[in-house]
Image 1 (cartoon, rainbow, N blue to C red):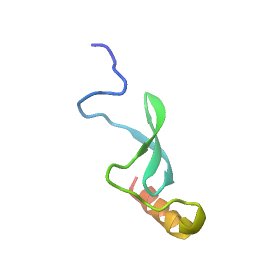
Image 2: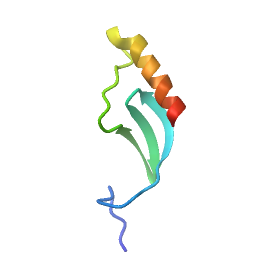
Image 3: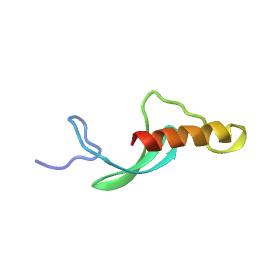
Image 4: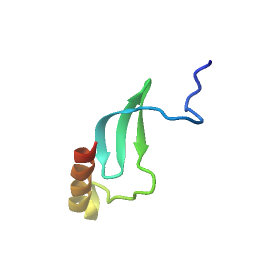
Length: 64
């Protein structure tokens, strides 16, 4: 069976490498990539929302 990327169906395990912010993280699955958590819109880690964004990042780091 040929490898199709990105996969179109099925269950695939990924390895989280680092958290970018409260709704994005860098992962490895044959290649490195960045993903956003579906349905989550966390505050950014810059600008006026920096404090809330850093708190969201810490929360996601604890969950991964």
